[in-house]
Image: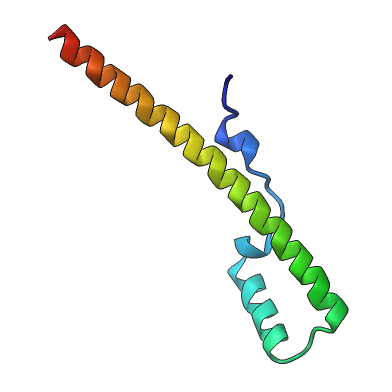
Length: 83
């Protein structure tokens, strides 16, 4: 089963984690009590969804790295057997 390339797996959306200034602004707003409970709930849902996306992307990357590593190991064994 072919693995999807990394570029197809990565969802390019405006993530909180992609912007340091956005993260800093949200941290400031939370610390100073500028967000009401509803906004905090929405933020929590968004952060949880982003975390899940990042975990999924990491899983894809790790799978691709394992496939690459296995391919290199197989070639190394083949070379040793041929020598």
